[in-house]
Amino acid sequence: MPAAKFPDAMKLDSCRVCRGKNLETFLVLGPQPLSNNFLKKEQLGGPEPFYPLDVCFCPACHMVQLTHVVPPEVMFSEYAYITSSSRTMPIHLAELAGDVTRRFGLDGKSLAVDIGSNDGSMVLGFQKLGVRGLGIEPASNVAAIARQRGVETVNDFWCERTARQVRKEKGPAGAILGTNVFAHCHDLDDFLRGVKHLLGPGGAFVIEVPYLVDLLQHTEFDTIYHEHLSYFAVGPLQALFRRFDMSLVDVKRDPIHGGSIRVFARPEPNLPPSEEVQRLLRLEKENRLDSIETYRRFARDVASIRDRLVPLLRDLKKQGKVISGYGAPAKGNTLLNYCKIGTDLLDFATDTTPFKQNHYTPGMHIPVHPDTRFKENPPDYSLLLAWNFAEEILKKEKAYMERGGKFIVPVPHPKIIP
Image (cartoon, rainbow, N blue to C red; front, side, top):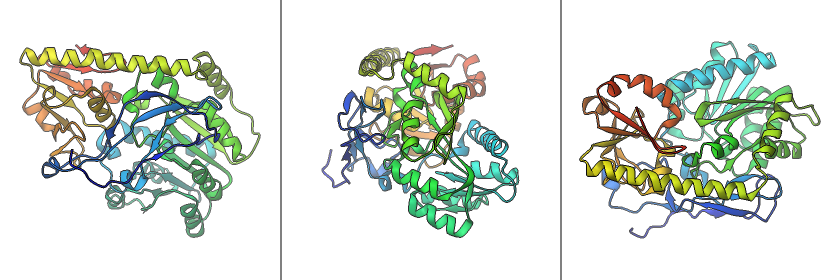
């Protein structure tokens, strides 16, 4: 690969939750390209940044996190994922807005702030309920889309500085939310200082993050990529909030994105946790999330997926089958690069996101076509890279399967449907 000067990744020197120093690396997936760094055709012969993608465990607080941090401006100044590109996510976010509005009695005077607001789908949910909404979005391309949809959006990274500016202009917030964004942040201290500054009396901080129990149980290794710095369980989150005199008061499991938790925190110390919080803490103990051996076993399971999936694809290609990738999600690029699945095994991929169409996947350079290509020239087999939306996709593509088309689902172990 041609030499080029790219920003360096910073090696983690201590746990971002408890500041412990004795981090133990258990999974090595890299070096890998940035999972949303799709390439134009003219860029294929040029340099491409690769960064270590390794995962470590903190024996002190049991936090799981990446060993290296890529500068956020490299990953988030422009962004390829659009929330409303799937039917599932806008419905999910509208439900979340309703849940928060009811739980905390938000009304027309209340301000709800969505951190990492993308195209404004969450804020629109609050607006429909009569609640004032504001988005915070660092990616200029998707912030522009949100504004076109009538969503007031601050084009900036979330931090204490941003929080102070918002409070000065808008007043205190009744709720601050972050769906699949808290795990993207390296400096959790600065993030939470901003949350505490902006929240008004009785306010709530609500996040959704992929749940570590689900990731381990279903071997969802492809959800690991450079944007996702942290892999949370309830225990480490509870410890983190305590450092900021906050209380984790409730939690709710949700199947979205392969298994997530919705976490409710209040900016007051020593509030009692719900029974569901206590139940998940017991579950985490039963699943031995406090033992490095759990994570070493996970690493062996990841290698097993690669060792089964690649020969399956090779055998199908030897039979002359056409194989596509269904979706071109960030998680798919972790899988493709770890397994070294290139154009010798996948003929093309299709995706509904305009920013990805007519581009090439990072690292393995699979051409990405509009989703219409799937119907116009259906492949014999399709590797379901967007497996987190499997239920939605299998319903949508029922006719494809009735005509003999088959899906390959890669995790938790490779299988062919139907």
